[in-house]
Structure formats: structure tokens, C-alpha cells
Length: 183
Image 1 (cartoon, one colour):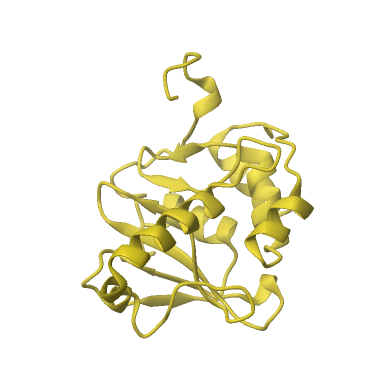
Image 2: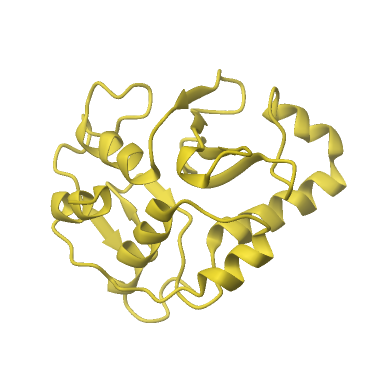
């Protein structure tokens, strides 16, 4: 059983079967993405876990929120280049150079989750995360789906666990919402 299927089972969901044009998305991004993440996006679509964790996924086609977020961040850094110091000792992802590529977060709490893109195969990119811009970075050698699973089920997965205040793991798909309510 894949980690994504384990996560679907844990939250009692069936795959959304979102169709993403990965070749076009990865060409625009300038890098391949981990297979686990692509499976995750296709299975979950847009939504959030435990009312807390939001993963930058896709509504299908050539849309990917990872790419949307990267564009916004680059525009902000063009206006305020000194703000990049917030990411030290890392830098923001650039094709061919590696760096931080954000895949999720918990906006209300300030938590941020990234891959550290390296020359390694995407499946080997570590996850780096922190609870806010002033905190230390934490590094994990695991996939996005394993990280999410640990966050929503493991009370000892500190400082990122949300299992203690939401003991029944759940996922709210934005496609379950009333049409037009989120746009």
C-alpha cells in the first residue's frame, strides 16, 4: 500500500482522481516533482487536513498551487530583496540551482513546509519546515504523504503534530464545498 493510499484510508476518503498535466507543470516549474507528491495531488485535490494543514495541490490541468506560491514569493522578493534573509541558510528555489520549494503550510499558525530541492532525484529531497520565520529549521527525510500522515496521527511528531488537538484525522476537500463558495 502506498503512503498516499494509507493517508486516504486514515481520513476515510476515496481518490479524487484529479487529472494534472504533469509534463507541462514540471516544464514551467523547471524541475520534476516527487512521484509521491504527484500521486497525493491526484488523490486529494484541493482541501485541508484537520482544519489545519493545507498542501499546495492542484485543481487539475496545468494548475499547481506550488507554482502559484513560487510566483507570488518571487514577486514579493523582487520588491523586498532583503526579505530573502528570512530563509537563511537556504535560498528560494531556482531551476538548476535548487533551493526551497514550498509545498504547504498552516497560514493561521505561520507554519511552512518546503522541499529542499537538490541535485538528487526528487524522491530524495528532504523536507525542511519551521513553525514561523524566527524559529529554527527542522529537516526530515520523508515524503510529503508520510509527513502529512505523521502530522495528523502522531502526537509525538513535534513541533508539527496536530493530532493532539484533532484526535480524529480528517480531510475536507474544497470540492465538497458549495459551488462558488471558495472562488
